[in-house]
Amino acid sequence: MPNSPMISAQEAEAIALRITPPLTDTESIASVAALGRVLAEPVRSCLDFPHWDNSAMDGYAVRQADLAQGPTELQVIETIPAGVAPQQTLGPGQAARIFTGAMMPPGADAIAIQEDTEPAGPDRVKVLSQPAVGEFVRAKGMFCRSGDQILPAGLAIGPAELAVLAAAQCDRVAVVRRPRVAVFSTGDELGTIDQPLQPGQIVDSNQYALIAFLQQMGVEPITLGVVRDDRAALKAAVEQAIDQADLVLSTGGVSVGDYDYVDAVLAELGGEIHVKSVAVRPGKPLTLATFGPKVYVGLPGNPVSALVGCWRFVAPMLRKLSGRSGPHGVQWLTARSAQDLQGAGRRETYLWGSLQIIEGQLVFSQAKGSHSSGNLINLAGTTALAKVPQGTSEIAAHSEIQVLLLGGAVG
Ligand SMILES: Nc1nc2c(c(=O)[nH]1)N[C@H]1C(S)=C(S)[C@@H](COP(=O)(O)OP(=O)(O)OC[C@H]3O[C@@H](n4cnc5c(N)ncnc54)[C@H](O)[C@@H]3O)O[C@H]1N2
Ligand code: MOO
Ligand SMILES: [Mg+2]
Image 1 (cartoon, rainbow, N blue to C red):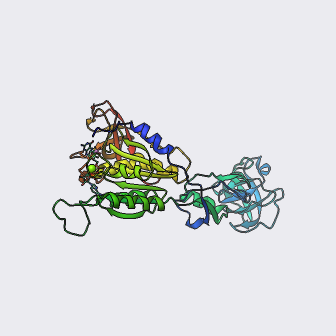
Image 2: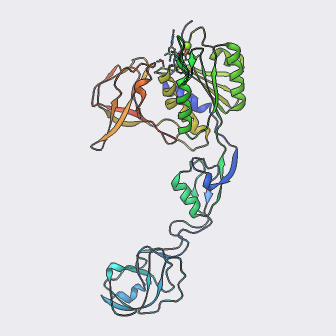
Image 3: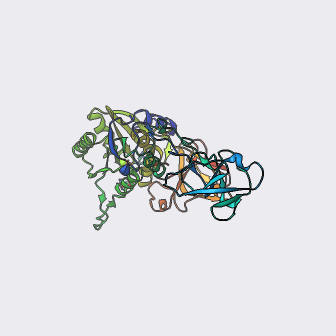
């Protein structure tokens, strides 16, 4: 059976993104439970930030014009801690003791910081230098006005966004519903983590890898276990997965072997197959198909190929599916390689390893040992993939290279 024509990684990524529709269903949830969720609508503030004119420093609220003649003594008419409304209006020659975050009293227009003052007897202070008008005053509305947009749609909510929502007293937010992603492994040879392996068996490590990858991307997967290399069983599993999920990930069965049924089953079920083979190593057999708005990703069975396929192609798809604003595609960083890197010539090659910052420069160190797609063992500790472009067979040590930093939702 001849090989399917290989398309480039860039083309495959573009197709992967084109066939993945962003989810549009929304739900209203408590902000406190919104970590990792994606905003479906922009959030507008219903408060000014700051909500009151207030002091940015511990010191004295003053009338700046009183201090034009050099060091000047002022009468301290009240003390204003944070959270307490001032009771009096400052007149000429008067000051109020004030602390960071406390409301400015009427009549004051600047803060003399404590370090620029000296005590001058009971209820008196000597201010040594003249602040500018507005100095150390956080004026009402200076950071944001009521009605301003404070968070855009498509933003994933992290600690900073939660703080903003809380400060704006938005206790509920409209978010995009969570993506439903189904995962299963295919293969008669697959055993479990806890049972002795029979001759020819291998542990279904892909399931662990894919579930963890999805969890890191903020997705709680629907796990459908192992499907035997049986056409009818695979067909039933694909149907079930497509029915339950927005996106389906399977591993194995996408190459040209007699038991590699995935593409045939997808076609039989009426799926439209967009990609079969990508010029990458590892991960060349990659099936991308759609059933209407539902997307099917058939990843290769080799454990490294399956995970690299997730990092390189599925992560962008999940970013788009989840309703995040773009860019969704992978973002390459420039680094230097600590070693010579070998490419596969005809295929864009991804080598796994780790990134360090050495004297302010990103340096990629390739994992020791075999970079075979069947060697899962030296994948442990991987924090980045280095790219050796198509057509390049070797990159000399210390050259500039492109790397993909791996991580969670942000990567
Ligand atoms: N004649 C050809 N043979 C192969 C080609 C080719 O172009 N011509 N491509 C090779 C490449 S590249 C890859 S990658 C694999 C992809 O294979 P499949 O997706 O069909 O996957 P399987 O054949 O089912 O398994 C491949 C390999 O991976 C192991 N495996 C499978 N599932 C799991 C799992 N859940 N956990 C751990 N390991 C798994 C399986 O035992 C095999 O060793 O095809 C090449 N062949
Ligand atoms: O493309 Mo396969 O993933 O090289 O072994
Ligand atoms: Mg196969």
